Each structure stands twice: as structure tokens, then as C-alpha cells.
Length: 62
Image (tube, rainbow, N blue to C red; front, top):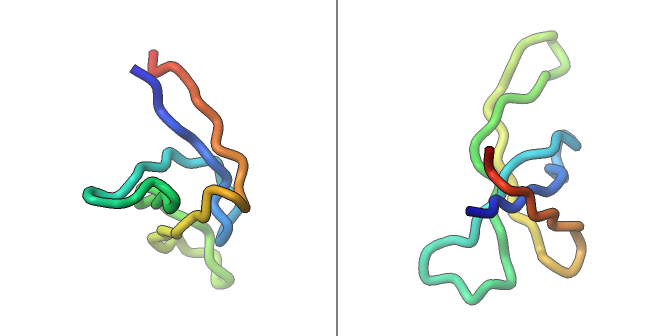
């Protein structure tokens, strides 16, 4: 099975992405992940990616 990865546009962290159910395939969402905030804490992060603007990488799951 292949997993797609991309850099989150909000925090620049490489995260797994997926196509939303019933989507047309032009938009991907990042899975929920933690990012560092300005106060030194951790916050949940999730972003929407337009396929034309981001590099999507395929990686085989171990």
C-alpha cells in the first residue's frame, strides 16, 4: 500500500495526506498532526492542499 505525503503549508512539517471522501481528486487534506506554537506549546494542525501547488510524494508504508 502507498501513502501520499506532502509538506504542510501551515507548519512545513512532512505529513500524510488523503483525498476526502466523495472528492474530485483535486484537493488533499493533511492528517491531523501537532505543530509548535509561538508560546512553546503544541497545537493541532490540519490543512487543505491544492494538488497543483504542492509536491505530493508517494512512499511505501513499512
